[in-house]
Amino acid sequence: MQTILLQDDPALFRGLEHSLLCRDGIHLLTACRERLLEACESSRADVVMFLPATPQDEAIDLRAGLAALPHAPLCLPVQDGTQARQALRQAGEKLGVAGRGWPRQACRVAVTVRGRGWSSRGWTRDLSPAGAFIGGRCSGTGGDEVRLDLRPARGERVSLAGKLVRVVQASCDLEQLQGMAVAFDNVSQLNADHLQAWATGGTA
Image (cartoon, rainbow, N blue to C red):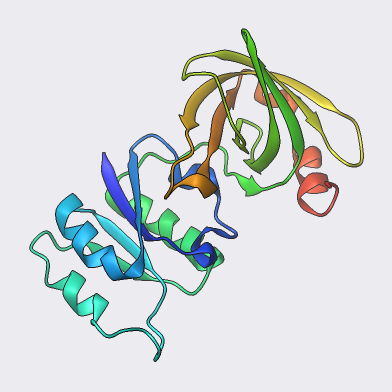
């Protein structure tokens, strides 16, 4: 398992595919900028992602400090969530984190997830014909059989069966990543036309 440490800043979370972070093979940590060096040293994180320093920042040279650590983490300064997404994909390839057969794309669609004895409402954060990451509280556990009812603002509703493969619980430093990853049973039910329509403004 690889450890990725991110600076806890909203600019890094906007635009990220959340499932890229919350997936098998990755242990995700966050820390404020002032504690990144300490957190990297104690966790021996493989990748550290942070916003470039500004003149107003209090002045430790973060890059130099990280580069001097004995375990030589990969340092990725990025400007925003788009760059962070690209950098995380590249880092995943370099570190050997397993890829997906179907690429995900950012897509916001209202969805209800129902498991045995529980249900949850939320929004998809990213979506592919094979699975989705859905923001919101979840009472289920990994392995639960679920049914998803997707309700786009325009077009037909879609109902899919799947399996809950991962749950990310809320915490003080990962609240923005709270949600669940679902793998669909039948990829043919959600096609490219759905994804294109929903990703280009067909959602609320």
